[in-house]
Length: 67
Length: 460
Image (tube, rainbow over all chains, first blue to last red; front, side, top):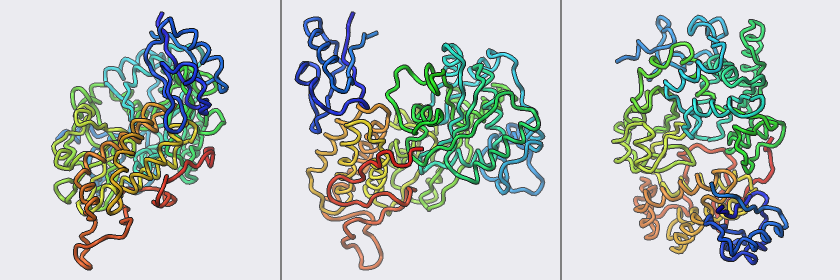
């Protein structure tokens, strides 16, 4: 089952933790807000992705299944 | 000309008809809103179907699409709401936050009962027991609509009670999730839509949101049938639509035209010199006038030109205006109208507006072009609503269509600079740009980010 990161841009306030925990899929723009890739998260990165989701102080991230 | 055959309003003897079709709007615009008796004389009584299916089939056959801007097929949306779990809610959307659009206000003012008929039919179709009419805040219009509703209730023609809700004067007030919030009693702010509004909208109920013009078309299709609706328009895009036209000569008016009508005729392009045409309003697209003059008014033709019909706003920029100054002013407005909820929109739009304002002045710093490209790429697709995407669409089309003007500005010249006094010379740092209609409180251009979002002010 392929999964990818999804961000709620209203909840996000730009703490930037996700970009440190999952740099393979999240970078920060010049204002400090995460640019989240729509690419699938491969199994080897899934644990890091879950950590980014649970550690987000704004609870603005989730891992969603790609239909 | 089939116009007489398709006319829904009887012509009064001696009345002068305004140009265009008269399906939705009466030929004479002198008196507002016919009373219920006059409306029933002109159109016949409200034909309830008794069951959901009949009207959906007719609307599908009419190929009616939403007239609020997105152009989504109405039958598909109705089916999705009818199939969602829970008792549905219907909202007629007349927020019309777009400053360049007046067609919904005109329609509500002149044909309120057509809209209210459509609202009842839509409620019946999706099995709703609650209906709302969400209309731009305007006391006189709200009084007229409240009177119309009282008249209908006294006559017993409405099966579902309708509540009038005022939309705040915000560009995004009519965005579906903002509408759902406001109708439920909250602020008219967009939300992150998961699940979608048709599944969980007002108070968590499946919600059918249709533009008020769309509802008026529903009321006519229910009476006259899909074949009648298709008598005008093109095979792929049948019917008529309301447009708000801003002519290069300065006149602006609302009219009803068959879809597929030549854009040049609708906007009077041959009569008054124009350099570019804005289609689809302030989230829309600039097209060079010569190219626009060859287009029919259909979504497919405009899409091929990289544009959309949107909610039917068309503006012909006069040849002596500066397209950069006009666009800069609109961008400062759009930046100020950001709800300020999503970081990229909150940070990016004022910077984009600021850089474009610089570009609209003489001898701008060349670097603002690169900034605009980068920021446009950074905000697109990163909002909870389409505000950044629509803003970027306008920016990109302006950078293309007004590339000659950009070169002139870099050399210290401007099209708006042909003022007779003093001959071709330099214009003031910010040439007055006043062609496109905007509220009076648009932030003035200056150095740095322009128009920071008016967060949380007057969203109710």
